[in-house]
Amino acid sequence: MYFIRQILLLTLLPAIIWAAPPPGIPDGWSDGYVYANGIRIHYYHATPAPGKPVMVMVHGLSDIGLSWTTLTWKLQGAYDIYMMDTRGHGLSDPFTPSDDGDTLVKDVVAFLHAMKFEKPILMGHSMGAATVMKLGAEQPNLAKAIIMLDPILRPFGPPPPPPPAPAPSTAASDQPKPSSTPSPPAPAPDRRPGGRFGTPESLIATNNSSFDELVATCHRQTPKWDIVDCQYWALSKKQYHGAYTTEAQEVMSGVMRIGDSLAKITVPALILKADATPDVCKFNEETARVMQHGKLVHIDGAGHNLHHDELKRTMEVLNEFLSTL
Image (cartoon, rainbow, N blue to C red):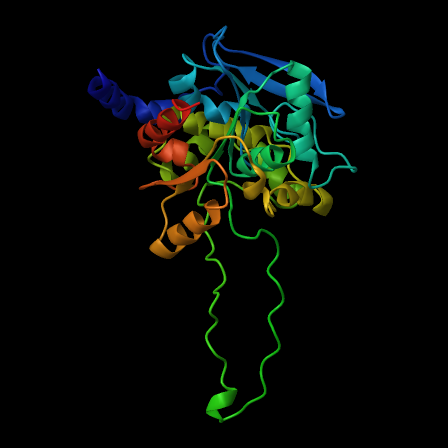
């Protein structure tokens, strides 16, 4: 059946890409709003699973709750899943002048309280991974477990200014010596199509892009993704409010400055990281050793959106971890 589905998909793909209307909510799902931390937060609820553990998903920068769809389909039979639209994204309210680097964490905390969830499993991707990581560190009794998909583990922010150049010298003793503690390697670049920061004009231009053009761009640049992932990616870019000011950009950048958050998480924790060079993998593994009850797994062959690039392997690792809770 899977083989037949793939043949049909390849046969129909040109028509799907060029003629598909923007997708709605998947069958059996619903959506709603809560007022939390001073704004309306919009969310999607997967097919209800009464009595099953609650799982709350927090997407990455410029995505929406529906960006979790293909992963949620794999998990919804065993978990009651809610997918937030982060502030400034999707159908949630935009950023406000009073927002800061703690705002997105406070949004999730307020959302959990408003929904009256007790000990949910929290899963985040990228910016959302940093958000749930910091929540786990600051609110140790709020979640049952923390799952982080490809968070940035190196120091995040503008690079420090370069040191002044040494005075010219021919003496061997004056030559710079190799550092015994090299700077952490930068992660592989995020090659997703579409912009996340920019001028209001450039962000609005993306909002005004044709849905079909966006789907085609996604499929061309990320050919491993399911067509559903590309459709919801395209929808997310048309809905993205944008960070129109430096202050709004700092809200999203600030939450990704994780500091010593990993060491403060006391509940079971899992980090999934994209495939990387040996040096980067080693750095990631050493960084993750501070977790009290956590593990880190690299997903071979996957980029930043590892749950789209390698869904099967992602599910294998998630199921192994979730089975221990």
